[in-house]
Every structure is written in structure tokens, then in C-alpha cells.
Figure 1 (cartoon, rainbow, N blue to C red):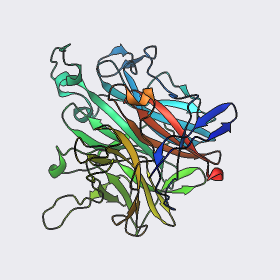
Figure 2: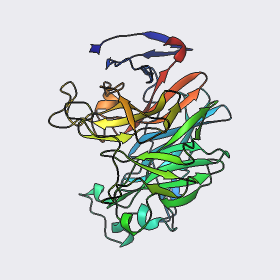
Figure 3: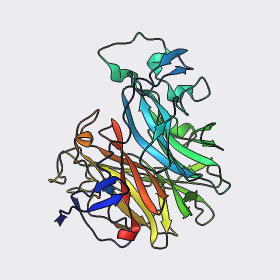
Figure 4: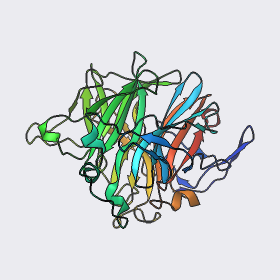
Length: 380
């Protein structure tokens, strides 16, 4: 049942209004997030920020085109937002913005993670650029490449681990990197290794974590770490060390085992894709996921291809076992900056932190800007 409600709450001088959503009343799920209307979008692209690109040795306005799809983590009572930024030719790099209140952010001048002349160049740099092909001004999208869509967690030892998408203009590959300080990174290459997965399209790795204070720490289950990934349906991989991963496969045919599928007639009828990390709780593993509405056999209340977000619950001892799932979305595009942009009708959630006793959800809007929504458990 569609529920329309408007609740005015106060966060200092910031006003938030809730959105029109469909409620499932699941006792394991986040019940709602309130968009911070007075501040959103909290990040916009800027042509002023420039850096010397190590690939071309030219100064680049690295976030001139778009900013989108952020990850977030808390460190020293500060929120660090790691976000995807595109230059005018569509190369993606990861920038950083910092906030002490979770809503007002200051950007670092240079990206903190980007394609370099290293072992990952063939996966992160467009093959057309590698071959020195002249730019075709009529096909800017032909040159898209870079490092995209980060998710970030902490290890038990305090190291930061980021999953991201390496894209060379032809194949997207789920990859990972680690850092002691969020600035200096070691790339570990593709998560799915081996000849079998050399050219396999893979994206969006959400590792299962446990909340410890305001940190999201990788959680071992039955002696292994686990990750959900995929951008049409969801698959799983496991690891002993968070660096070397093994995909869960069907032993009979070697195919990846799907643990979450699109559903005809629902908001997730076209595809499903992980949001932030997955959260280990007493009721099970909660996964916020992004979804797209199909052109046919879809949710008729949403425009076709709309990106909205739902939630799924998996067994806490058997991460592959789906227990429950919300029947509808808890956030969807209803603002101009969410409905019109590089890609229209998009709310793509990717960052989530517990900060100052509230949950802050960060998401890309229309693949162009970044916004925040807040859930206050005390007002449940």
C-alpha cells in the first residue's frame, strides 16, 4: 500500500522531509530514510578542480562532467566520502570529501584513486586511448573508462578495503584495493581471477560486515569472509584474507550461483545490484540493493528504467540463503536532480555510515550529483 506522509524534523538548522514510499513494515529492515531537502544535492561536479593525470601528463578537470555513486566511512569522528567523478571525456576517478556533521562536505583538490601506469592499466584505461586512436568528438562515450563505484569497509586490523569497478571501455571488472589511511592505496586487481574470468563482466562488491561502534568491520562466517556482487542478478564470493576470492559456482556446470534475482511486476524487474556493504545482524544479513524497473512486466507506478532501492535479508549462518525481501522500494527519484541528468530517474545508493547516533545514506542522483538521506533510530 502506498503511504504518503510528510514529517518535518530538525537537525540543527537543517530541515528534512520524508518521501512518498511503499512500506513493508519488516522488523529487520531500515524503515525509512529522510532526504535532506535543504542541502541536497550535497555534491555537484566542479570544473575548477584539476590535477596532473599520470596517464596523459596533462592537467585534467577530473570532475567536470559528473559526481556520483559514493562510498562512506567514519574515521576519527569524521565522515569520509569516496565518490566517483568523471571528466569531460568520461574517465572516472575517485575523489574524497570530508565532513564533521555528515551533511556539509569539503572536497579534496585531487582524486585519491585513479588509473596510473601500473599493472592495472589494461583494465582501467580505454583500449582506444592505449592504441592512440584520435578522439571522435561525436562519440564521447566511446572513451569512458577508469575506476568506478567504490564500496569501502574496514578489516579487523584497521586497514581499509575498497571494492571498485575497473573499466577499460569494453569490460567491467570487479576489483579491490587496500589502504592504511584512505590516501595511499595498493591495488589487488580483479576479484575474479583466472583464465575463466579474464573477460568476465563483473561489478559492485558488497562485503558482509559487522557494526562495531561506528565502524563497519569485515565479518567472518564459518571461517570465511563473504561478498555479494553483480549488476543484473547477485552472486557470491568468499575469501580467507579479503584479498583472494573464490566465486560460488554450480559444481555441475561451473556457472556462478545466483542468490537474488529480478522479479516481474516489481520495481526490481529489470536488474538488481548491491548497494553499500551488507550488514550482519541478529535477525540476519541485511543487504540494501539497487534495482531497475523494466520496460514491461514492471512496477507501473515508476517510469521504466527507474533506479530505486530495496532490501533483502539473508541467513546469518548461510549467506547464500535468502530469507526475506521487501516488496517495494524505500527510496526512489522524486526530485529534479534525481530525475534529470546523465541518466534520468536514478537514485543509486552506495554509501552508509552510522554517525552521531543516526544512519546516513549517500547516493548518486541521475548519475550526475550526490545526495544524502538520514534515518534516526530514536524516531522509529
